[in-house]
Length: 180
Ligand SMILES: [Cu+2]
Image 1 (tube, rainbow, N blue to C red):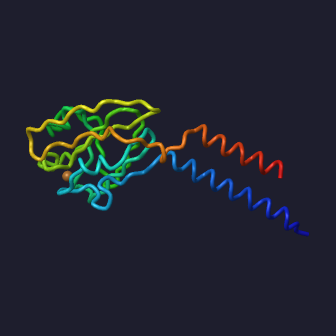
Image 2: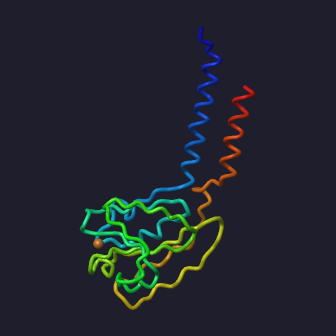
Image 3: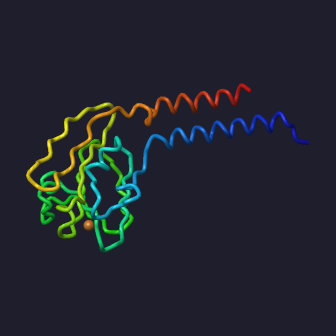
């Protein structure tokens, strides 16, 4: 014998659980670099990088035809010079490179294929931790096109729910389910 009341109770708890998962999922974002343009020549990644506020735990996905481009995480000076003979922190060449922003710091990315970095395949971003503000380094103006500015403005209040919000929500859900 099925108790319809019990079944309703179960459904309610399932909905709460799914809601909880959605809220948790909102805490870290996955960004395709360049959005629909992906990682290619002829795209202004300075503009792209300023569209979003990046946080620790977010993932950048570099999509491109393998062997036509690559993704090098580099130092700031290598970002500026585009000389990848030094200052390379990590190399990704899969064509579907997933880079997790694991630390609260500035990240610099370039394509190492000759001419591509100077042609615009480079950008810098700041991965923000908990409420710390960093001042971005000014980009040099000598080269053309100008390297992208770091986006440092704007709040990300809406996008990011804190762990506490999540815990409170989950705790509340469990209590409701137990009491009901
Ligand atoms: Cu390239």
